[in-house]
Amino acid sequence: MAGKMIAIANMKGGVGKTTTVVSLAEALAADDPTASILVVDLDPQASASACLAGDGLLATMIEEGRTIDAFLALRLITREPARLAPRIRHAVSRTTHKGDPLKISFLPCGPHLRLVEREIIYNLTEREYSMRAIEGQTWKLFEQEFLPLKEAYTYVIFDCPPGISPLTEIAIRASDLVIVPTIPDRVSILGLDAFCQIIWKEPPGVLPKPRLLPHVLVTRWQKNVKQHQDILAQLKVEAKAKDPGICLLNTRVQQAAALAGALANDGAPTFKQKYGEVISVLDQLVQELKGVLRVN
Ligand SMILES: Nc1ncnc2c1ncn2[C@@H]1O[C@H](COP(=O)(O)OP(=O)(O)OP(=O)(O)O)[C@@H](O)[C@H]1O
Ligand SMILES: [Mg+2]
Image 1 (cartoon, rainbow, N blue to C red):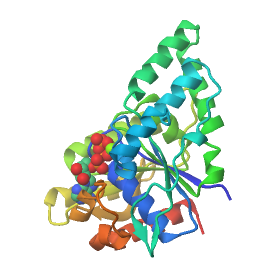
Image 2 (image 1 turned 90 degrees about the horizontal axis):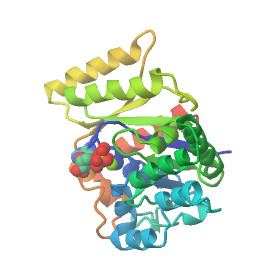
Image 3 (image 1 turned 45 degrees about the vertical axis):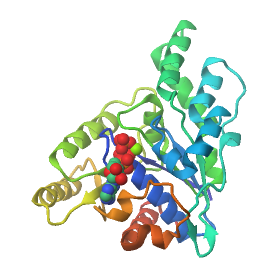
């Protein structure tokens, strides 16, 4: 059976996207030791890459051109027959579970993704491609090189940058599921509305529509904060409306020290040591997502 592609995305920055990517990847791997997980970093800030690989390995991979931006530059600018899959680094996780390292592979992003995306536009417009054709060309490359990864991995998880870069939009539209981490406060909700409007409501141009509604995951939840309670109630109403714009996941990820430290790359903790009090929440999230994706 083909694996599932999950994009973790929100136009708003700092809402817990990368924390969700790393903790979800590790929770999926701990839940099923036979599963293979690939994390693809689409963010030139490279937080997921630095967390999973550590600074040393990440620097080596950037130097060797084993990054998304290097791949895109070769394929779309200099038009070389570069392949994506050989750039993946296997067995990167230093977190262990039941005596074995978690089975996580990853594909990093270098710092030049934004420049490469701009250069692609300059280069292809000079070759008289229209903007539509450029988008179509990037989509075709995604179909050729990213979608086949579903055959090799049980889960492919994209860490999207804040904002909506061209590659982020393609990953969102191609994924089986889009999880939108959202802090339940007023400012985050404004960003959520705008994000859902742009991707799910506006005409998609040459790209496909996303398969499912955006699945909102409440993060940094603090049950004693009145604003959080109010915004959660508002999200529940929106998700139950006649023609809802969102699905609201039942799992709520609380504000927790274990998650604040999830992106550190120090030592080789066990999954239990690393996540402690939030393990049950991560497990609930894994089971809920499997239900949404109809896995098992
Ligand atoms: N549940 C949580 N409890 C406590 N701290 C959290 C939690 N989730 C995220 N954080 C902290 O919030 C900050 C932002 O998290 P993160 O980097 O995951 O957000 P992001 O959406 O990926 O940000 P960006 O938009 O810059 O990529 C980090 O310092 C992280 O440690
Ligand atoms: Mg991030």
